Length: 157
Image (cartoon, rainbow, N blue to C red; front, side, top):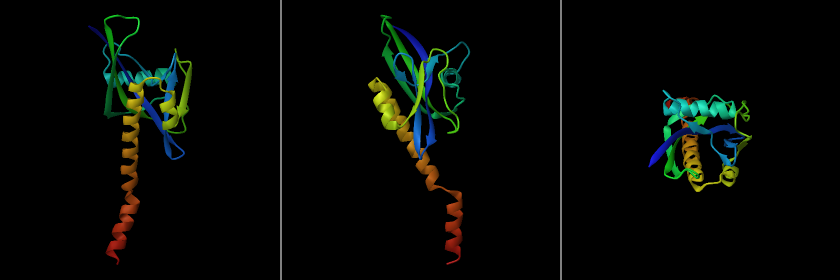
């Protein structure tokens, strides 16, 4: 069986105290992704596709990697493997549709679950959301100013 390879990213930012996810729409909502070009790494492909489809230059988190594999409709005997990473961007930036993308939406986790058409994409979003929230909580719990204040308070009691 022939295999096609693509890469993309679950693109997100923080707004209003929550992660917001960027979904692109061509014939259905999904994450920015596309084919690997000659000489590109998977990571380079993911960043290029995010930029080409949304105009955002994301920061890639390669510690998160999920693979979606499926048969291509209309191409008997061909399967597609898509590697997804996480990519973040500053909240002041606003993604906009580029190239073949008709629409781009920045939505909450709950909205994204409703818009994503396939259970595999929903599973990728759930895993990405869990990782993003976990990282955010870990950063929030290790505030250096609070840590210094606690040490000072302990020493002076």
